[in-house]
Image (tube, rainbow, N blue to C red; front, top):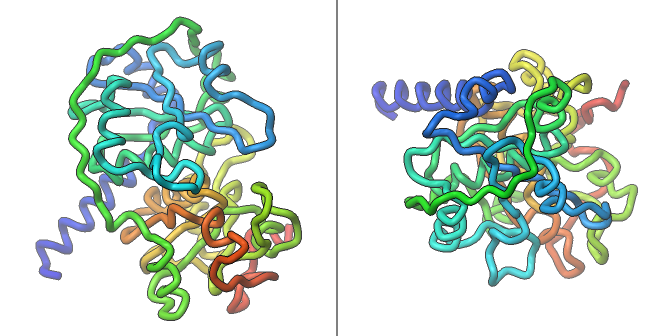
Length: 309
């Protein structure tokens, strides 16, 4: 890499770290800005008995459109909410009024759970001007900021989808990496799921984790007081405690490619580069006839975050 290329890469990482989050104060001040578009990306796990779209219709940040992760997906995949082909993604988000030239802000109803998945999805398709609302709807409501129940009818807007395959990994690539260990594989699921001590969320899946992966439950990156992402210095501490080196390439995984993106958001916030998502995650790897698995704590002696607290 030439010196100029190195400087460009460093500048891109710094810009991403700066722009990947916006505060509730920022959004309140820009709520009516003509180039800002707000997205409710709420999603709930199977079995929770909650309807994200219905809750959006009852209450959302003014002007927000609803991004349904289970609808904007690959129609040909049997796996849950896999990223769709570029033309499908472009057609879906265009109807939501999301397109070129927009500053997109994504939030969810938990605070920071599924919003990062939609943030990452837009980046995969080449739209870099996208951020997550830090603390999400819970923080917005706690501060007494406005919400609305009126339907939002955006006009269609052109969206240019440019697939960036560097930000994604598939089953074959992860299988190859189990042998090479060229990239760090980091699992965002709860520790007991990683260790194989409890049944998986989706019936029929095996218990355990991908061989050689590290454990960093996504909740470890959040401030328990308000659900916001931890500041960069504390994020670096959490990554170090889990054995994750942000300087080296990282691939994140989870149950179905949702909370793994919280890890990617945290890594982006500390200026890490060479980040990718294994979209199939445990929904694919954990299938009954899937590749080999491991159980128990992470290999190599890395302590699981929170294990001593």
